[in-house]
Amino acid sequence: METQPIRVENKRIDSPNERKQLSIEFCRKILEKDGETYTDEMIIRIRRLLYKTGYLDYKLFIEKRNNKLVSTCKD
Image 1 (cartoon, rainbow, N blue to C red):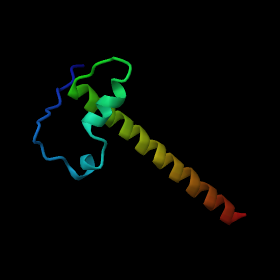
Image 2: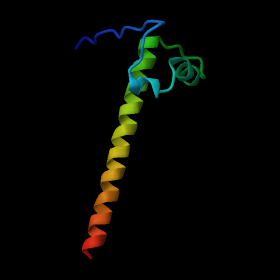
Image 3: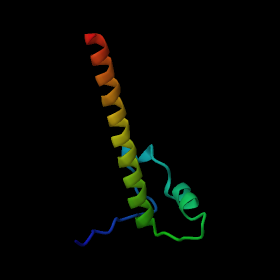
């Protein structure tokens, strides 16, 4: 499966969600600490994956918390 390249422009207007994300430059500093190099496209893909993983973890946390509250109320 061939992936489509992500277009990155210097003066792009980020969506409201992207504005809240860590900058590409900040992510690059973290990712390249050990001497590895990444393209902007790779950094964006990694950042998206981490944000999606974090969001899923948050949703699971909320669901578990709500299930505990429901089971506590039934007792």
